[in-house]
Length: 99
Image (cartoon, rainbow, N blue to C red):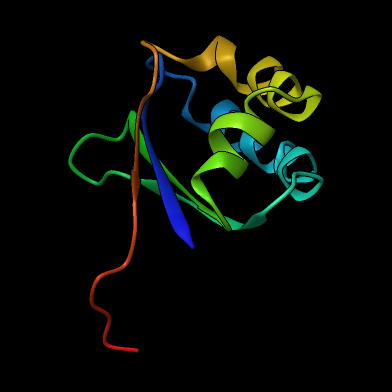
């Protein structure tokens, strides 16, 4: 299992619209191969900054399967207009947990 972490800065004043668009995009993620859920976090110190944390079975499920799909196009169509800059994306894997 890997976690995609996307840092997304949105245009000032578009925070609620962005959050609603991400909620609408749940279906696009849900249809995607290897998808295991996501969380959207909003920065307290920088309220226009979000971190979208998506669980994928494999790295390729995100970088190949999702990014090359109509589901990705649907996602970007819903949320892309709110981006202040392109998202910064990285992938992590768990090395230690308290659970």
